[in-house]
Image 1 (cartoon, rainbow, N blue to C red):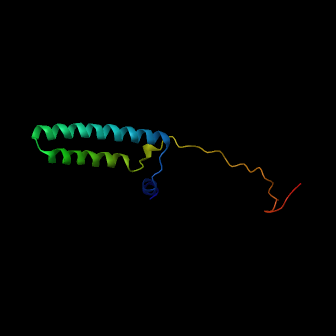
Image 2: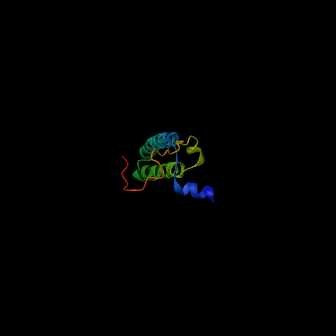
Image 3: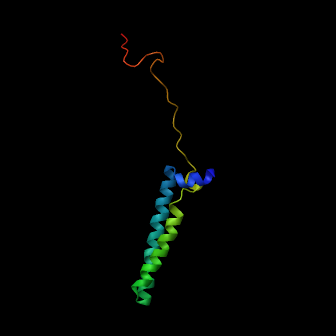
Length: 95
């Protein structure tokens, strides 16, 4: 259940974002080229549209879910250090 929650939540790190961008760019570029060639060979625009739609669906399934390999380098934040004394009340002025 925790893995499903992580996939739905959609958190990935910066390196994962770079990977997703590369996969999407390369996948859609290859899809556009192959779709154009298929449409040109068969002289039918529907081949172009449907084949690109298929490539788009595959790229969408590969990039949209937050797979664990997109989160291999999570950002580690520093602990919060309070600089105010704990015993000061709100509105109190100290000289």
